Amino acid sequence: MTLIDEHELAYQHDKKRKIIKLLIKILIVLIILGIILVVYLKTKESKKLKFSIDGILQTNIEDSLVLKDEKGKIIEENGQIYFSVQQLSTLLNYQYYNSEYKKKGEDKTKCHIKIENEYTSYISGSNKIYKSIINKKSEKNNTTQESNSITNNEIKYEYFTLNNNVKYVNDKIYASIQAIEIGFNVSIFYDSKQNSIEIYTLDYLELLAESNRGDIVPSTEYSYTNKRLLKYGMSIVNDSDGNIGVASYTNNEKLNSYVASCKYSNIEFNEGTKTLSVVTSNDNQKCILYLNLDSQEVVKSITSQYSDIIEIDNNFQYFLINENNKYGIINSDGKIILYPLFEQIGIDENLYTDISNKYVFADKYIPAKQNGLWGLYDINGKKLIEPQYQDIGCSIAQSGDSVVVIPNVKENVNGIVFLYNAEESLYGLYNAETGEKMAISLMEVFKKVENGSENYYMNYVIDRVNSVVHTINVRTEM
Image 1: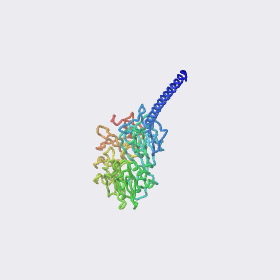
Image 2: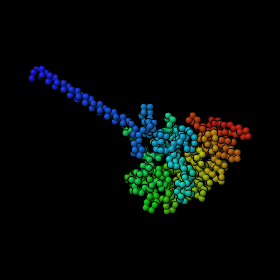
Image 3: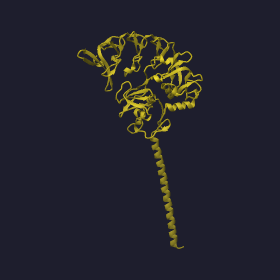
């Protein structure tokens, strides 16, 4: 081999070596780029919100479903995130309406949703929501206990206080997890680290309950109000004799026991008061059981010798009783606050948008009707205003919202509205504590929300013949 051949061979060998090194470098770069790409994709995927309903991952979720800040980060307040009520309604196939249930209209700062025969209202800026439950005759249990019940009204209301206010952002109403769980009857699990939201409906939870216990009563055999127990890890159960009770399906230590024993013929769950109204099978006695929904146990109970009893506050302190179609009030110790001497206690709350308890106004006033006339008592049974008026509240206001109570008419003085002349439709405003007249000859008493503030007005009759009235602002002009 010549010297030239040896140089050519060395050159070719060196060239191959350089090519191999280059390929190795390229391969290393590609591997590094691949790793970077995988990390990027995983990071991007981890940032993408994972949203599932009943275990099924949802795709094409609108970005505005969950409330976010300007940087696209999910907003959390007090450990709660916010959902668009309208968009979530669409995902869950619930009906969505503008305005709250009590006041029809197209006010977009308020809304209500419909599930079965239950309507939940959301009001922006408020930490209160309420449910309106329509009792349809075809759905009522045809038992003597229910047909004679004082709770058997056309519409029943349940009220809830939230930790976070309902929000109105970008023309949408947003509600916290707590508010959504209550109103939508779902269970929600949010993991901020995994950026995931899991929602479980009552139908899914019922299947879970049936897989954990063999004594679960199908929800088709009771009212929808009782089905709501499922989101608190409990369900209606029965024994071999057909008696019903309530039991946990999520607490392993309670899977062979009961929250409320199987000894009842009828059970009705009131989510707002966290109570079970029950009728015992052996003697048809009406009882009320107060539930700790977190620990899944009955912590208080009251049994009554009266023909009917219902709780009238959310603290298990006061109860409406029915004896021979006359109504009264007792407390949790069984002490009589008002003897059952009244034709009616409480008003029709469907007529008023701001009444959260038709039995007890402002946490201390009890409206009562005796011998066809209305008066007022305090929560301790003291008579404040003798029953003497033809009706209570101005329920036919046309200029604004109807009114019963005007808080703080003057400093620490609440006003109560009565109809004192039905023939001429004249109302009066009275001191709720003393019954003293504050204003009479009123054609209308109403409330308006103006610039975020509640203002109360009265229309004075100046000349009825010529329909001349004078409108004044109760708090600023009286």
